[in-house]
Structure formats: structure tokens, C-alpha cells
Length: 116
Image (cartoon, rainbow, N blue to C red; front, side):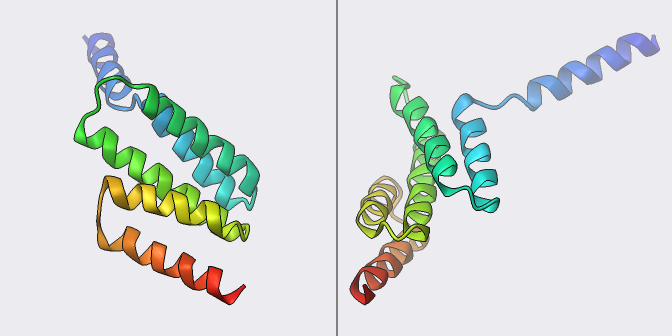
């Protein structure tokens, strides 16, 4: 009986903890960014973007994840001083999900471009 309960709990935990390849790539990208490994972060975020774009049917959650990926790329590019790429990625994020956070990022990147 205890073995059966343990098995059920393990299965519930395993099923609920499954993440998509895109989500895992985003998590790795965030870790790399936090470790100041910006080029590796960009590779992971681009990998996540590839997984998301290759998906045929996209739910609203998929679009949100894609927008977040573009947002993460924009921040990483801006950190490296690559403001043109950062601006493009921020605009992609905003076009997918037009919210205040993405709009503010575009404005910050534009200020960074003007100050250079």
C-alpha cells in the first residue's frame, strides 16, 4: 500500500514538473545571464525561440513564452551594448504581447542608443 502511494505521488510530481524544451532553454538562458555568460544566454534564448517558432499550433501561452524569449534576448543584447539587436527583439516582444513592461524596455533601449 505504501509503495503504491509513493508511486502515485512520484507520477504526479513527474507529470506536473515536465517542461517543454523551450521552457528549459529559457531557464538555462536565465542562469547563464545571472552568471554573466551573456553569449551562452543568447544561444539558449535563440534555441528556445527556435523551438517555439517550429511549433505548428500555438496557444496563447506559447505566444506569451515567445514574447518573453524576445524580451530576454533584448535585455541580454542591451547588456552587451548591441542596441540594434536589442531594439529588434524588444519590438518583437511588444508586437506579440503589447504591455507596459515591453514598451518601457523599448524606450530604455532607445535611450541607450541615443547616449552612444
